[in-house]
Length: 225
Image (cartoon, rainbow, N blue to C red; front, side, top):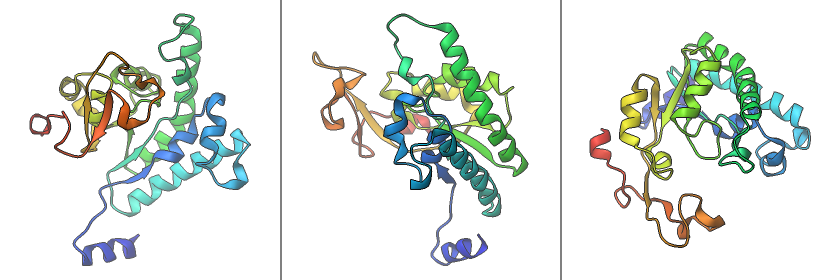
């Protein structure tokens, strides 16, 4: 780690945080996504969800140690998804199923959060559609189940909130004490008579909500900063 930092310093660069988005995704995978996410794992654990999860958990543990050795204070990841298949459910809301999903999510992440605490690094979940932690309500639910763990924090990316039609400025007012990382990414939402937030299974370029180059979207970065 000292060698890596030395090479970067010579070039006027520094690391802000490491990321385990793909490994974090594999910490919690609903069986419906086994095939889709198997490609994120090494070949030797594909097709074996239990081994795949153990591998992913170990990678998070390594990332906590590496972050400390690099002198970093925050780490970026995804929460994974156990409840996401039941978003906007029909048949209607199944409280017991969702409670089980979030309890399991908290159980598998708790030892990882403890490891990050040992190494003095904040674990920042990117609030993102496709993850169980995709808005403020889901983050609060998870936070309560991990006993308001001090290392359970947020990677704030306004583009993902805007595409859900959330108030991404009010989000800062509510969760500022837990926001420890920031993605500067632009997006736009232009609803029409053919599709809306869910996108109609269309490619990104054809959806009502889509990402844009910085300055070409609708995110009010001036007010965010």
